[in-house]
Every structure is written in C-alpha cells, then in structure tokens.
Amino acid sequence: MAAALHLRPPAPFERAKVIVERHSVGTPDKDNLWGSAKRLLDCLTTPALLNVRTEGARQRTKNKRGLGFIIDDAPQYAEIEVIGIKCKRAEQRTVVTIREVVG
Image (cartoon, rainbow, N blue to C red; front, side, top):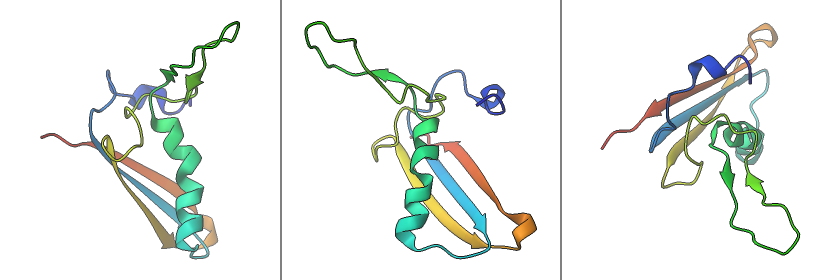
C-alpha cells in the first residue's frame, strides 16, 4: 500500500484497462491465474459505503482497503487482462499496468 500511494491518480479512472502479468516458474491453469488476481484487483478499487440499512448496525464499506486507482473492477469500469508468463525462479514477479480509457 505504501509503495503505491504516490502513484495513485488524483481521482479514480472512470474507465480503465488493467493488465496483470504474473511471472512465475510454472504456468498456472486459467482459473488459478484469474483467482490469484482477485485480491490484487480488489485493492485497486475505490472504497464505497454499502447501502445496507439495519437498525443498530454499522454501515459497511466495500473494499475498505482499496487504493482508489479504479472505480470498480466490474466490466463497465475496467477491462481486465490476466496473463501468465513463464520465467526463471529469480525473475518471478507480478506486474500491474493501469491505463485510463478515454472515450
């Protein structure tokens, strides 16, 4: 979180293209590849209060740890691509690219 705060735009992108490149020794199944990106994508979103109104209950926040790069990871806000790239053990990493889509 601390490493990414200075990269955050002044306001979340209305529409974005998010590319997650997972560089690893093995090539994961497609479902595992996308599953491994779930929490990372949630961190890119903007925290939002949920419209849950019950007596005596606190109001809940969706993605309370979101960094505010994108509004949400739903299709109307983000085009998401997750790619698995095979590499040597010493080169393992995850690269996230976020670009604003205009128009």
